[in-house]
Image (cartoon, rainbow, N blue to C red):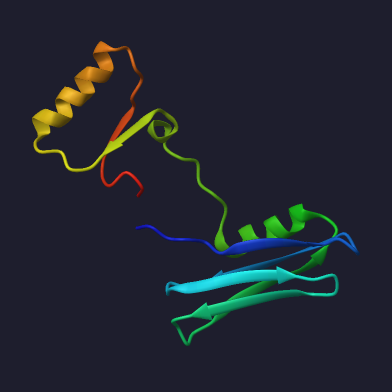
Length: 123
């Protein structure tokens, strides 16, 4: 349910060319990037023996990298209307009555709330 999409765009300041990298995995990994004047080094440490990497070759327009990336994974979808509103989140409700009381509190204080998440806040 929660995850990452490790995709990066890199600019070579000398040539002004952009390139990209997408690392597709469902396993834990650590990625670090270091740059010097002569080279860029990307280190990936993964718990998987399966590696699937996609390189997007240098171009002058960053839009070309993003277009190629979307051609690979698909384009973003329009989010549902309710997801664009005001959200509140709390974890550890004792009962549904507590939740309803919180919603009433928003209404009584004229505070907007379109969605109440019943989950751990940082998720």
